[in-house]
Amino acid sequence: MFAVITDGSHQYRVSPGDELTIDYRKGSEPGQTIEFDRVLLANGGGSSAIGQPVIDGATVTAEVVETEVKGPKLEIQKIRRRKNSRRHTGHRQKYTSIKVTDISVPGLEIIETPEEEPEATPEPVAAAEEETAEEETAEEETAEEETAEEETAEEETAEEETAEEETAEEETAEEEASDEADEKSDE
Image 1 (cartoon, rainbow, N blue to C red):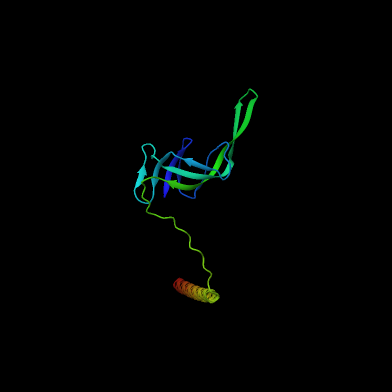
Image 2 (image 1 turned 90 degrees about the horizontal axis):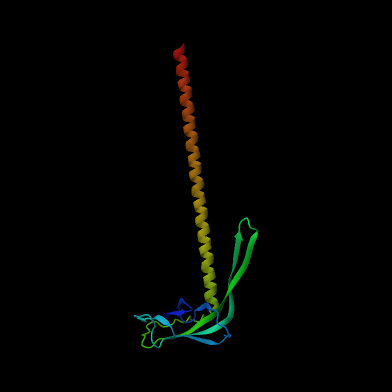
């Protein structure tokens, strides 16, 4: 389930449990609830409810997590050339951090339900030992495969070297034979 809300000329797509930063709310305190009644669109897994411009009676409830969150520092520097006039200022925008707790839209059919994470059940010790034994056998098999691959690679390089030596011997034998034939023809 999600909704699109507007706050301070910004639009936010929110779901229950989302944390986001909105414009600074003076006087808000951690734990305080904030209600957003300007809901533009909502969807519960089926067809969407679209407001014109807002959905009547729809609200998004959020809880203040942190009152004042500072944004990135912006540096403003103005220099007028050849006038020895410089001005350097900075600015950090303040925000309020909130966590969305509830989305309520009248008449919206909710098909999807929030999925809860199943609790991790402790495994029996015997099952854990079997898994480690399987991992060890898998490691042994990969080690055997790697040694077999290395042996075949060594054999291939040895065959290539012997083939190169044979071709080199044949070429030298042919050169010697042609040299002898040239000497005989010269006599």
